[in-house]
Image 1: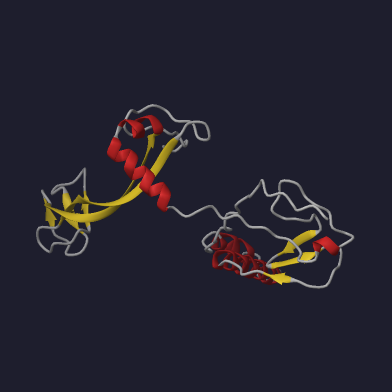
Image 2: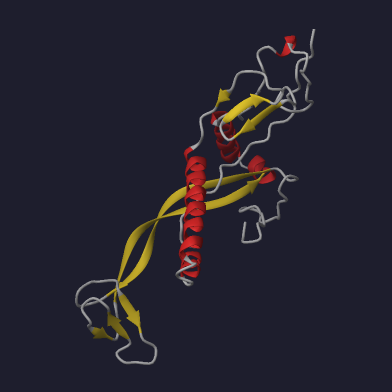
Length: 221
């Protein structure tokens, strides 16, 4: 599980192909001792190593210089990740029991169905195969589900906060960009300054969408 998304078993070290091999991924927090170096005068960890100067070390807080820093350790929370292949799980009885207990306690997959309550009486109803949306005329715009055939009625859904923040950020940036275009007519450097500043504007990515297949629409009777 590196930068190129390689997968291998942490026990037998054999490569695992995503979507083909059977394995269990895990992640858990763990406290571990992390070494830190401090100033022997004031105890600050704001110290710099100077390769071409002596004394080698200098404290940015009290300005003291010294050849050797004071060493200490502190507890830091790190998250351990890995995976174990199915073969290694089956070889260890306790591990097999733990995985079984974990899988039994996990949340079931979310399977949603979107359909109009009066689909059986609608002359425009058109079933969609292998899709949780029952009719192909059902559409969505932002947080509202409606019928593209112009039938009255709208279903309003709750918008996730991450999506709401993302939309508001985009609107803010667009309005600010329009303002800076007008200002740049009198101040040519304003637009360039805005482009530089906009790189640091926080951006919230959209929430993931889970695709559900295999839910077939009910046929008319």
